Length: 213
Image 1: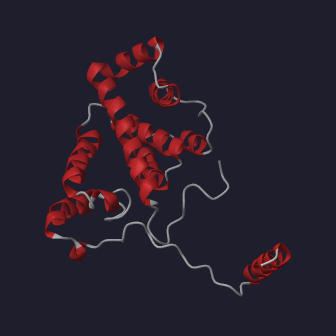
Image 2: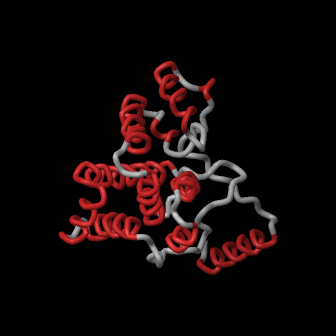
């Protein structure tokens, strides 16, 4: 086929798409959406635990985790500690997760944890500026410390002596370890979501719109 013919066919296809004459076939999800009655015996125990705490059902990061139920159970237990038993106050913990969600542009993480951060006391103005990929202004000292710690760790792969000292004064030695772990764990969660192309529940608005930074 001559190049001129290829160009003509391509132009015609584009024109048809623009007029809506050709339907674009939706891509199949990488992991089939699951319901409890679809789970295999080795998945059911984890699935039951997930349904007690998840705002996205068996979707989000749980869809890939259920494909490896033994690893998924360990990950679920770690996430359980880092959310419900950590030494880091809830407000600061949820803020740290939101920082990771923003850095990864993770739709599910922000959908799930943005409201939790607001409910825990993070000012909406701070969350809005973080969502807009700006360093939030008017942060309280505790939020500033967490923001600096997590951002330095993720961007520079190190934490300055001054920031480490501030975090230790704020949270103690255990708290610094727990804060580091929650940041790293939610990078892992964001990675699972990226690979599985996980999204928010059907009909819900995406936190990060196409074309936004």
